[in-house]
Length: 75
Image: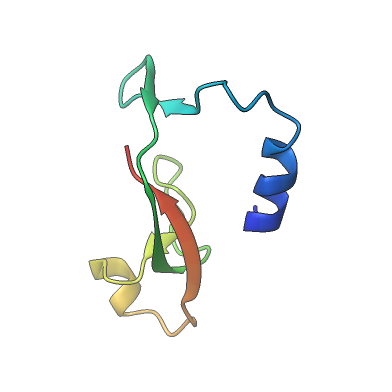
């Protein structure tokens, strides 16, 4: 999802609603402040990892794919 797509979806929502993400092992958690990071797309093949990886991770360092900018919301 790109930022413009997220904005379009959020514009459909009540601005007073809370924004949450899945908790680590269950439940829900509030999102944190957004930061811009660089990621490598489609690097992880294991089902239990997200598809993309932060460019500074040990896996991404050995890959020749070009990193892209992403907006990251921490918990």
